[in-house]
Length: 228
Image (cartoon, rainbow, N blue to C red; front, side, top):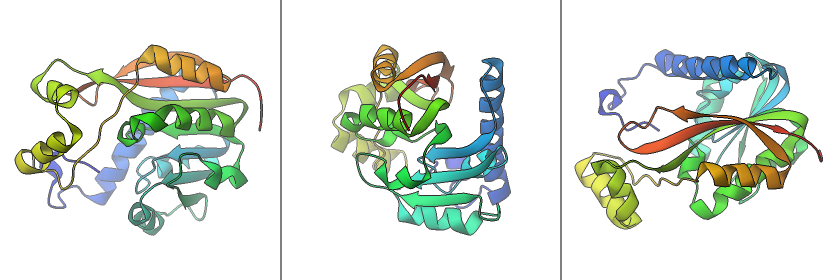
């Protein structure tokens, strides 16, 4: 989940970890409010929820939140950490679509951070389209996605090394517990995908969480028609 050596060896207290999720969602709420978008509602979806770091924070703003992730181990930990009294549900999904959460749709908000970048590149556009599909008309989508590697040593490694060699370097020299895939999409392509899916891109801003590695963006879009 986090490869910062400062936190290896269980040196990140759980409450501090969850506080980082609350801070992340607070910043997103402030941005949404500045755009005139609602920051509360009935139902929200958190894609790539992991152990619920941001999911629980979103539950302070929405009546119910569905967290979806590919890893059952993450979801078991999220369930163990959940203190929302049943307002969070956690769903495992390894498919190329999000039909696993259709029964909970439509959503007022779909949120994703530090997740799409680990999806194989060929599936990213499909997931973005699925986010829009699951929103009610007028619903809000906010997500983070890298755009391209930076012109730095580590950024160039992501750009030019094969995934197998990149994974070897990550584990052998950087101490990663497992290879970490990184994918991205150009901002103009993101706009095209959203438009084709029936959403309007409202705002883009640079995400600074990958200094020295990737140029990454956060996006806000609104579903402008269609169903559900």
